[in-house]
Each structure stands twice: as C-alpha cells, then as structure tokens.
Length: 271
Image (cartoon, rainbow, N blue to C red):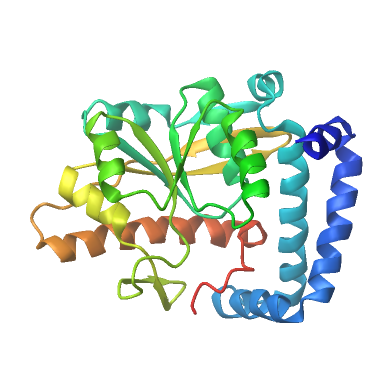
C-alpha cells in the first residue's frame, strides 16, 4: 500500500508517461502476447491492426495511470462523472429480482462501477482473484475505496443467488472464457467460449441484465446504462439462456466497433 500511496501523489502526466513506457516495454518484450493482440484485431476489426494494437496497449497504460490517480477520488468523480440511463436501472431494480450490471473489458470498466457507486449506490462486483495475494489485497482495497464490495468469482453460485434474491446489484465482467468451455456465443463472427452464468441467473431468477459502459468525452466520464435484457420465458430453458447471452454480446460488439482501441485485445478471446 505504501507504493500505491506514493504513486497516487505523483502528477497524472508523469503516471501516464511512466505506464506508457512500461507497457511499451511489455509490448516489445512479449512477442507472443503482441501477436495475439494483433491477430485478434485483424480478425475482428481489420484495417491497420498493428497500429491499433499499439494504441490499445497505450490506452490500457493510460487507464492504469488514471485509476491510480483518481479511482476513489470522490471530489473528482462528483465534478467529472455523469450517469446516463439511470431510469433503466431504477426500472430494473423495481422488479425486486436483483440486478446484474454486465460489461466487457472495454473503456475504463473500473471507473465505470466506481463512479456509479459514488454518485448513486454501491454494488457488489464479482472479480477473479489475482494469483499474487499481495497484489490482490492492494487491488481489492483500491476497488472498495469507491464503496463497492468485492466478491470472488470462486464463490458458490448459491452465494450470488442469495444476494440477488435480496434485490442486490451485482457487477460482472463476462467477456472472457469461463465455465467448462461447452457454452459458446458468436463474437465478431467467431465462436467464443463463455460462462453462461449470467444467462442462467436471468432465466432462473428473472433477473434483468443491464449492459453498461463508460463514455469519455472532453474530460467528462459518463456511465451509459442501456435498456435491460430480459429472459424470454416462451423459449425452452437453454435456448432462452443462449438468447440472453447472444444479445449481451451483440451489445458488446456495438460498443467495441465504435472505439476498438478501448478493448482489451491482449486476451486470447477465441482460444
């Protein structure tokens, strides 16, 4: 925590320069990861995929610097953060079934849930624990500085079900491989392995799914909360789950196509 506190005192421009330098070293030093990033962008977006890959790395570096400096800074958030589509959240929560916020590793997803917690209400965020316990403790402390409660993705599904039945709000990143690998959705024209848990929660418990992302314009950060995705009760169970997941991923594609450099392409999404 001492290192974190020291970094937080440094000027934002210095942090950006520092992390851009470090991420460029990673970009050069890890050719396998660089090739995965470039290949993902080439297949999904096309165009000048090499330039876009480096731009994506730099965006990720800027995001780390930004979060070190401003995550949990309530004064900064109150001045620069906005919420669009809050009526969609109120409508979803009024159903009394709990709410699942879902997003992708797109734009500043950490600041998205932080700003919402400060301006509106804290939520539970499901995360995969970092292998290093020391680093995991630091990251968890930073995340909870906004008021949110961090939950390990390794908890039993019954724990999340209990929270939803209490009309709690869960935030879940779902755009990486999960589950046993048998469930798939189409993502940029290719089949991707995903965990179907969000779709199962929605169809089993009638939980509304709220896709949300962070929009950045002229120093203003806006949490965009889209209309809820609901399970179609008229379809057979697994077909309904598939339909929910497909609709969620189509939302992700729409966001990413507009600003592809803001997506975390480093992950081998189609492995």
